[in-house]
Length: 214
Image 1 (cartoon, helix red, strand yellow):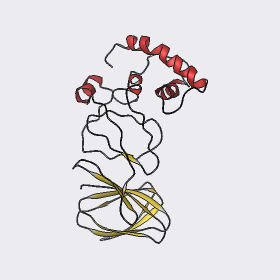
Image 2 (spheres, helix red, strand yellow; image 1 turned 180 degrees about the vertical axis):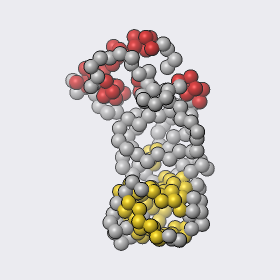
Image 3 (cartoon, one colour; image 1 turned 60 degrees about the vertical axis):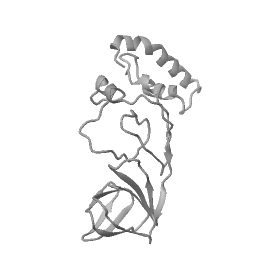
Image 4 (tube, helix red, strand yellow; image 1 turned 90 degrees about the vertical axis):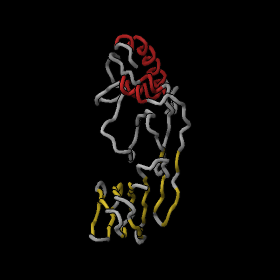
């Protein structure tokens, strides 16, 4: 990861060309590192100044999370999102360290100082049903918690906020009844203050995620 760029190119050029050919020949699947390397380069006209983040693809676990599933990443565990969309909740931080595969600022040496070099077995969480319409994804930290609220027309969700809560609507629309009455649509969020008693209903099916402090 700290090699000069010309050495990175020398090491990875033949690998990239090999993976491009293997993907073209339908020899790769998404659970193989080479598929993602080929995807990264398949529309480029030339292979030069190769992103050193390619090294990591061959060391990391490749994890597929289906809709409604979740995974917890401990501090110091590097990761990258390869495809799709997700809701990410993280502890309060003034910095994110990156080592490659991004147009954003890269600081390899600082990243390596904070990286935990330990193999892990990914744990896909399916969520635990708490009450009508809510599933919680237990996180082994005190900083944050997250749950999924999924309601159909006619169903309601009642709660008392034990901390500041932030609810983001992913699909549909919710009506929040508490000290204020609010309609919150897809892509919008609402903040619920600690101690507030509130009710959520929906005129249609809705999917939302709630962030809170356990």
